[in-house]
Length: 140
Image (cartoon, rainbow, N blue to C red; front, side, top):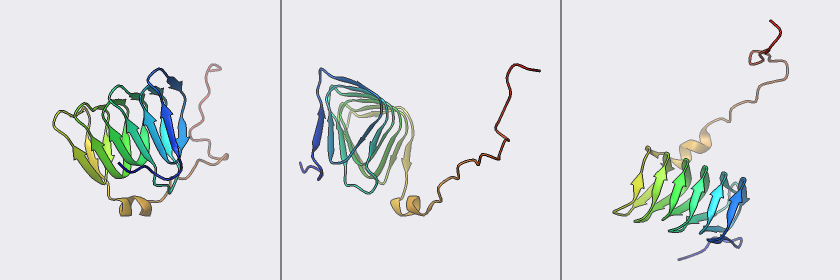
């Protein structure tokens, strides 16, 4: 199996990581991650959640292989592989998907064409002068 350029990061089975992960290269998860996972923009990164691995958060990467548990949404711009012991509690957004007998998805499978995703405009941040979302609490 080929690895992505940029090195490999391993979260071993005896490790629990709390917080978001931003990476490039390959990320191998045998332990537990409580946070979101983000691949570097434009990279060929890959995430693998091994059989005993668990992620409580969203995963955003070009290539994602799951054979453990994910509680959160999965966003792949290239390829998702759900192996026999994969359990995903959330939506899986994919361009190409491979699902082996025994894999479970408790959510939606959502096809998203990478060419269409790039064309979508980014949402604008509210300006400081826009007070439509400001509310007062207490003094009434």
